[in-house]
Length: 226
Length: 226
DNA sequence: TACATACTTCGACTAATATCAAATGATATT
DNA sequence: AATATCATTTGATATTAGTCGAAGTATGTA
Picture 1 (cartoon, rainbow over the protein chains, first blue to last red):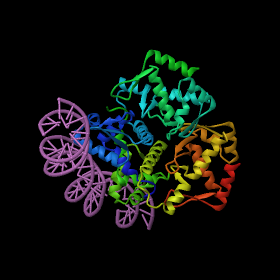
Picture 2 (cartoon, rainbow over the protein chains, first blue to last red; picture 1 turned 90 degrees about the horizontal axis):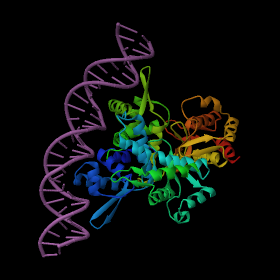
Picture 3 (cartoon, helix red, strand yellow; picture 1 turned 90 degrees about the vertical axis):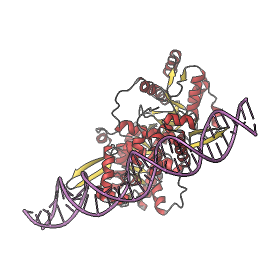
Picture 4 (tube, rainbow over the protein chains, first blue to last red; picture 1 turned 30 degrees about the vertical axis):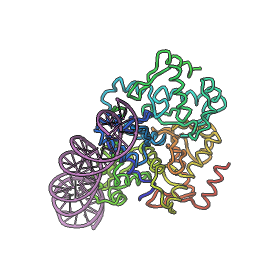
């Protein structure tokens, strides 16, 4: 039938285990060097380089040369959304999860999705926002209400500064672990940054896990109960 | 890192051109036989059969034997949503669309997405519903308001009958051609059925295109202007 | 200039898989 | 029963694509 865009070209890029591992690693939102990605994928440097060339050629990742390093990153939040969608199917038709190890538990509670908070914590925040009518979501689009702007200002986020940019302020991103939405967009990124700044949580190095401090957990609870 | 579910397993299933064509064809929502899918994919019957076995094994399609035919269909709306997400990336990083032929134009205006209406018409309906507060959408989830229930009843849809089933009533599905959401779920399917019953539109055989009649176009306009 | 680090390209090997013809199995029609 | 249709299985082939060692390029450091 040949309708629509070429599915298989994109899908086959994700279809190789080494490349899928690299993309998964890049879901952390941080740009990584070719060596780091090689390690992540468990392949040699030349192999990784070849894969990265394909991903780059295919438009799934971007590359930025900085000195003798080359930093690779996901090409955009659309790519991230696609990866989450595939993860969702993979989880549902699934590999009969043998045993959800402790790492999986932590990932499910809170993790980085590209550059914002995902997992149960992320979904809880999103639910609070929509329920209290601070955020009006419609499909993948979302918009702050007047009350919502005030709420985020109280939280210490300068919304006006974010609105200047090309990137949409609010976005709803579907969560593979919980099957519900969490807040993405520049506001989602800013919210996570703020939590890091407040020392509510910190990133676990070398993974997507976001680990909340006891104090942070309590403060977060208060935030979404208020 | 090996986190989350196995991306590459699912992606590689979509990554073969023959299989991708089959899945695209199944996006029409109708179940198709192995022979039809072989034709669609441009491969021999044995080859198609082998691909279908893989897709079935992988959980992307279901099969129902009926006499000497075996009808294949997408395993669920989750799979359909994933395919749309991949299409979205494919369209955006894109194949530099040479020339959007007439068929592409018709597909963009109105097409079947699994079993509901997609394209500009589908998005227009969804926008109307949320704007008039007939539907409350939050991420991928959506729910009818009281006003919304009345509205759909007026349109001739028995909502109570739909609610009995396991399938969610309302769902927001992201549209690759327009990059916005349209109405999915059992209600989305019922709405499209109703339009067919009212003779507002009919399917173009052998494609996903939904072609509106002049009368149907006018009635549809009135419906979402009211 | 010499040397080290980060990465890519080249070349050869290997493994995986898409492909179809022919045979087999299963179901309907006569 | 005999025959025709639809589909899967088998087996054999060919192409693709992932893999890494070795060599080459580019950038930073001594």
